[in-house]
Length: 369
Ligand SMILES: [Mg+2]
Image (cartoon, rainbow, N blue to C red):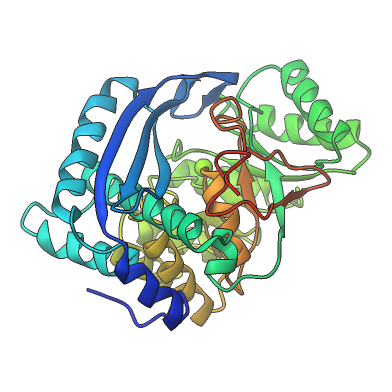
């Protein structure tokens, strides 16, 4: 199923049609995380990545990557990207047409999971390729004009002792990044309340906090804990319960004054629309890989805009910044430093903002223009 949202100008779309997808290179990498992440639903020490580079018939390249919480799945993800590329090889570099083509071609297998991420890798790399071919940063190709995206720090702040959380928060604040996400899922609610109070007291109220349970609570626990947190002036409470429990999430959203945030585990436009229609949360933060690529992310953001819902990104800061720069209902960019050592063009935020450069495409490499 396509969508009527027009993402690029007719002129650029015509040029895109003249570029032909020729080959793909796929590698895997597992850079160590600058700070290991301990969440309510698991620990991460490495960023397990599938690196994708596609090439057009005239030698223009486009890059993307996929992140996997499980290193063991990298070969399967890489193989799925190869299968998806084989299906679009020889077609034009039109990400919207190719996304719809892939969704249709693999309908019998069914969407979601590794295959959807593979489609996303092709889609994201094609958008990068188009930016490189047209000599435009992606956000400009998408009609955006604002290079400064409000962001929050999400690198670290794992479940752990107060001293560890405080030390990381101090590091963020020293760079002017006073907006940050704290992982919750401690044994008792008192531990969580004390942690947030101590953090706020330490910085004299000069920081803004959102919290993330990473789906770690039962519905009953979620009502108890979210109610207890309701007076803590949090920016949002993220994924308190299992991501696909959209009806229960809607009840929680109605019952709690603090905004509820979900979206990183919505695997299709249909699921995203379901969450919107059920009012399963106050805000949404689709993941550009899990939703099926930049094309699907932008279509989802448009659907959210029609319902007056603000959209944030989930991970993938390099491409997500461009997407947020090109929509009207942008909320915050989630910044994690996991790919800092992987791409020379990686940008770190300062003063609670992420500033895009004029590098062509996504700008993975410093000298792409
Ligand atoms: Mg999260």
